[in-house]
Length: 182
Length: 160
Image 1 (tube, one colour):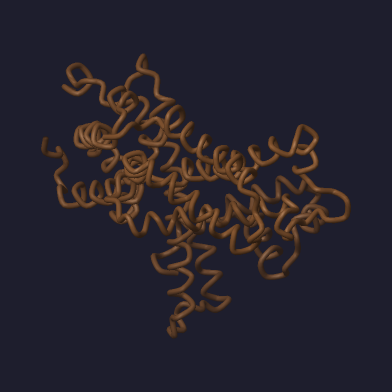
Image 2: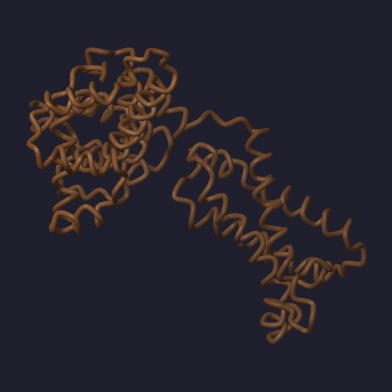
């Protein structure tokens, strides 16, 4: 990449700038050279375009705010990556929560009875998910009988942590095996 | 230099947002309003530890900071009051203003110092008209000195 070998140190320019014009110019040059990396990172990680734009804005805002912490001996791209990775964590978390809300909201609004599977339908889903009898038993105890983890652990002679893990694995199998939309 | 990204609209839009957030064009009226709010907020806070105008929270024999300042002398108390008030305003402005706004302030620092002293003094005079000239001069000198020191030594930005 030509940027690595030939580009001037824009972050050093930004750090040593004394006027807003100089700072704006240095940041703009760095942005024009590198923003495609942050855009691509956000998109590859599954963020929507809107959230990717927010991520890019936050990253370059942080680049500006942390300009005095940048050490000129370090790579500009490494500094950009560190800040991008740090800011992206929040963006991924926010997007995950938002998607969860959207899914729940569409379920809430749905009038279609197909979205409320009967016990028989639930049983089909469990079978399709290729669960073994022990996992089915665990799920039934947890979600049909409303037993908590400690109660299940006591009844089956397992530790509470093992019960949690086994249920978590069973749910993951169901998610993987369930038909789309159920 | 043109951006390398394929989605150049997104790139330009985001840059516009970054620029307007970090380097906003200064609207003097809005900026003066913002400074006034910050200054008045700090003024209210500082008056809670000063017994002079009757707003102090420490009235039962405890005069907060004043009791410390007055141990030195009355004049020192006046000077320290001016430094504290305008110094904390300068600090709050430093934390809250964008760089372009700071540059605007630096360019207009004499007007800013004079106006802020004049308006604060007027406010105090309205609250308590029997202010002694000598005490006022010491207080104003402390305030002006702290603002001047901020512009001279602390602000990383010099007039563009």
